[in-house]
Structures are given as structure tokens and as C-alpha cells.
Image (cartoon, rainbow, N blue to C red; front, top):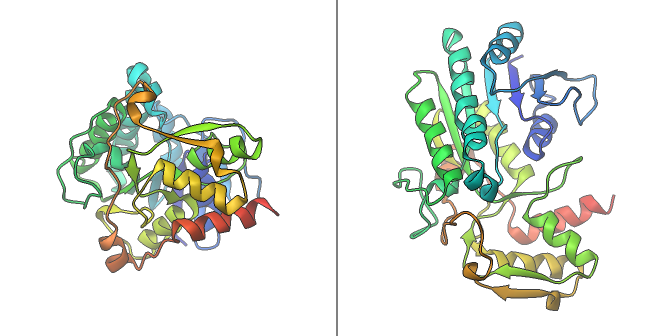
Length: 297
């Protein structure tokens, strides 16, 4: 049975990866916290801060994984614009540490990247389109991709877009923000000029499962198939859950005064994942119905 080490295992994607992979692989889940969010005797857990090389080296040498999935990241786009050093440590230095600690045994690294490496002028984007990140978060994630490509180790870079879903004690994401506010009857303002291909986290985890089964090396896009702006998604959430859509006011990005510049038409084309992996994500509508069922349990 292959050994898989997961970083960022207490986050939204990390939790779903554990669920998706637990039956087929021997897992070591890692995160900064002393204890795992998900409790189970079927996988191991160990605290790990990927920003510290000695910790990376010790954990990797002890567990000797066949594959590392790096789901650890600093993903708050506006905070990254202000806290540049913290962003770089988490998103680039941490990746450098994993790469260096993996090189002796040539361990495959599966790394999660983003559509924010593109400028958002002509999305959705293919794998070979030219990156041109508009914000510091995107620049750091692009730098992490370049570190991996230059490393010589076997790698898979998985770019995704606006990951959403539900988990245990997870940070807020766009779906949760809309859902929680509308459920409480609170009005929200949502932009009509930021397009992406929103990705149900369960589908992303399953896509990574498919990569492990192949195995696939190189760069690949795994996201939802619906190319929508945020307001469209918010309205669909309201309609699916029976909330009042009049609580949602459409606005444009300039009215938000966000700290970090956003790519307006980002999003990803997933033809390669469909053809080479057999990846078939749920539609946005199907994903929201799935979440409604999950939240009603």
C-alpha cells in the first residue's frame, strides 16, 4: 500500500483528502496543530510546520512517503497583500522545504495552486497559458510552481479555483459566507465582475485521488466546470437553500475596495483532466444540492 503524507490536513481540502484516500493508502496527516480535527484510528497524525525545514526532514525521513500532497497554504488574498513575508513563508518557503526534504528519495509532490496566477483578462485558462499574476498571493503561488518545476523531483501541480464546501472547524469560504449570512437574514453585497470556475472541495479531493491512481505528472487544472461570477453563485445558493435572493445586492469590484487586485475573468479549463483522468465534477447546481443534503444530516 502506497504511503501518502498530507500537509494542511486540518483544513477544508485536507479533511476531504483524508476521507477520499483513507481506504486506498496508508496516510500520515500533518498540520500545525498538536491534534487532528478528524479523529480516527485508520490514519496517523503528526504536527508539522512546513516553514521549518528540520521538521519537514524529520517527518519525511520517519514516514518515508511515496507521495506528498501539499494542501498547506496561506490563502487569504487580501491578507497576503499586506502580510507579504508571512505569505512567502507559507506559500514558497514551505514548498522549498518540502522539495529539499524529498529530493534524496525523489518523492512525488502534488502541490495545490490557483487560477490567481493568471491576470484574468482572457479566462478561463488552459494549463499552457501564460501566467501573469495581478496580486501578491498569485505571485507567491506562481513562485512555488517554479520552485517545483526546477527541483528535479517528480511533481504534479494542481491548479484550482474558488474552493468551497463544508468541514469541521474550517475557515470561511465563499459558500459558507453566503450561506451563513443569508440563513440569518443578513444582507450581503456580491460582485458581478469576478468570474471563476468554483470548485466543490469534494470534487477536488476526488480529482487528486484520480491523479494518485494514474499516476499523473505535470500541470493539470481541476476545478468546477461552470464559469460564473460571484453574484450568480450567490443567487444559486439562495435559490437552492430557499433563502431570500433580494438580500443579495449586485455590485462591482471597485465598490469593495479590496486590498489585493483580483483577476476579473479567471477560472480554469478542465479538458485535460476530463480526458486524461476521467474527472467529471458536479455542476454548480448539483454541488449546492449535495451541500444542502450534507448540512441537513
